[in-house]
Amino acid sequence: MIIQSEIISLKHLLTVEALSDQEVMGLIRRGQQFKLGAPWAPQKNQYFVSNLFFENSTRTHKSFEVAEKKLGLETIEFDARSSSVQKGETLYDTVLTMSAIGVDVCVIRHGDENYYDQLIQSKTINCSIVNGGDGSGQHPTQCLLDLMTIYEEFGHFNDLKVAIVGDITHSRVAKSNMQMLKRLGSEVFFSGPEEWYDKSFDVYGTYKPLDELVDNVDVIMLLRVQHERHDDKESFSKQEYHEKYGLTVGRSKRLKKKAIIMHPAPVNRDVEIADSLVESLQSRIIEQMSNGVFVRMAILEAILNGIS
Ligand code: CP
Image (cartoon, rainbow, N blue to C red; front, side):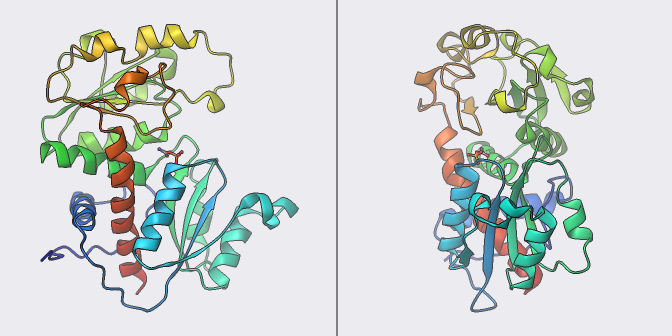
């Protein structure tokens, strides 16, 4: 029998910084329990959740839907392209409406960093907000599924060497992960084009050329090149990027036997990572996608604990 020993209760999940270490570990362990088939005991018969995605998504959107269905929650369909957003309705008014009609939780992805500030300051909006990604700001649910995947592999974070490689400036995944990995005791390294690195990241880790890192790291976390967030034309071709900053087959042979390869996906195959490595033995990219469902179940449960 699986016993839930840690009851976590959250009003919102907006950033990973706002979570205590105990809450992070509790959500990871609860995700693991859900993966093993743990049941959930809701305090009410009916909860309504709406997934409001204003930026494209496959993994986050669909794994939230699966998590909601596994928990027996009522998912209220929302498509910005066929909603009153097309008549000029603001994000605030969309969420205000969801709250007024009885939606308990809004999972939101939006292009504006910190879009959630005005929502949580509202005295009229009562629903909980789960951040499914805010521009180049944060991606807390991806961070938690990444942490769950690392924890499953190593059983700890302390003293693990983790390289975060690629388009770091534009990556909300990188920002959430660097903060939390450093806090949990991992040694963080960065690599990738210098123009996509910011000195402000130095407080979390050390920037090095990839060839100085591949032999030593326990985790290599590749990031998608975020073409949609680049104002200027990129100064290298896909092939040049792959050879200089990507995980090539050649570099992968230098990884430690127990090192794992991660990528939040979607993957630009043969750019950030060689096509043949995406589903290779050392890759945990598919596991990350699967774990997304279970950690999101843990997050939704914690949020519903907070409003019951
Ligand atoms: N990793 C991730 O956030 O993927 P999606 O953009 O498909 O949700």
